[in-house]
Length: 96
Image (tube, rainbow, N blue to C red; front, side, top):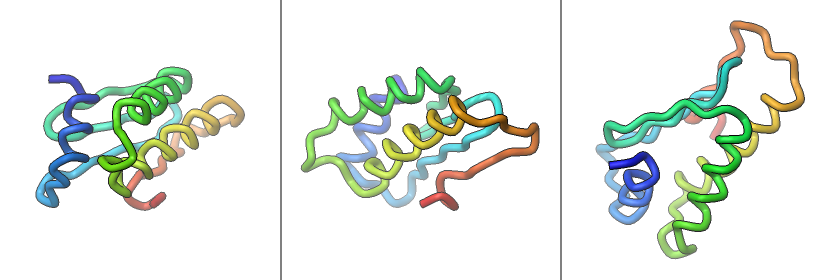
């Protein structure tokens, strides 16, 4: 399965025992859900956010998924415009 598939499934089931994790670091944005994980560059993160948004209709876009889409866009903007030091780290759960 792919990360996109797992995120769609998570949105439809909204399983509270399954966590969605994302981290913004100097090198990119890591997203993990239901045993799948991917590390994205700024452009890839922005593209994935758009794809996730298209894949999920409003009725299936739970708050956590909508927040992830915004986090991916935020992360891409930060990576594109800022000099980030090696210790920079933003956790999705803290950012929300």
